[in-house]
Image 1: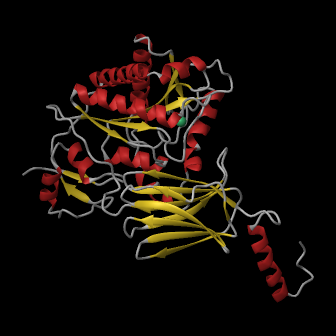
Image 2 (image 1 turned 180 degrees about the vertical axis):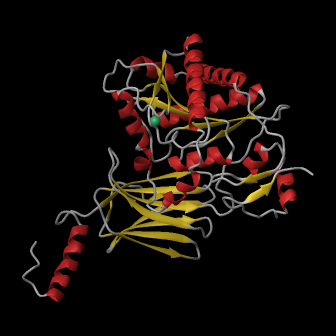
Image 3 (image 1 turned 90 degrees about the horizontal axis):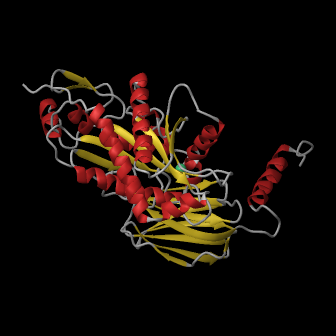
Length: 432
Ligand SMILES: [Zn+2]
């Protein structure tokens, strides 16, 4: 299109028309709403609207009853259901109406709530999408704390089931989905540790919903994790590839090309699951000083223990490798990523389909964590002196680090219940 010979004002007019035409990809072909899906996380509900092509949309809020209305301009109601019940206390249901102006998506809210709407470009098998996140106002963003009492101070283990919600992870031969397999193994792993006592276990996700990578790290830091174990499942073009792999991050970089490609695939989950363009403002705040060499050694040991337990128990052939997984990078604690098997391998799929095998796998991981803490008992320093608040720290993690309660920490510093702390703030952690 050449606008140069035209008068400027006219050119602008042509440009405006062109923009509208560009929104409808081919003459006569309008975007169709092909599916509406939803996921409930502890702090928000995500609704994903699949479109057959890119489309402009507008958003508005209506009250009595409270609704979020997204109009897909010029869109058609396609195969998607006209009414999708959600009923999770945040969203009642999602309705789809055909208007002359386009396809109207109505999100019926349980009550007025903050929300965010953003588009996602196609990625792999995912089409153009519009994401509507509705946030729950009455719970904190964090997951509930579950404690196991013990005498020597709990060992805090953060388990990170990969993927979830909009991001299924690897689909392999189609019988199993990575996000479901790894959540089940993670839950069993957490149960096994809790049953042994002396552990405080946190999961970065507890259901089928998407959690971005930065949030996973944030949870780990907020919970004051001693170790972090991310659980995933593998895939490979070679369907004979099988068994487990345990990865840790090292400055030496990837073990091999396959490890590099695997890290690329796992790191792409924010693109599949969908991260709003303004969502990553807190990434910097979770970057903490790494005691890098110390953590690399411990991570390497943790990986070796996991590999040994999986092999010794006859659960899975296992190798230890290194690769640059985003979810492990910049974590201020020893961390590994376990690939529990290949969903592209029939034998692995058969095993991973069995609940007794998943239980056995979880037991082997719990044994590895036991072995790790036999070598590295968590250090709880005696309460003394001052503490400078580092990025990512919470009152809870600071109190734990210094062996005092959050109540004591508040009292020592005259902090009210709702007080917040700032990076570089100096807190007294000494009992008088
Ligand atoms: Zn994965």
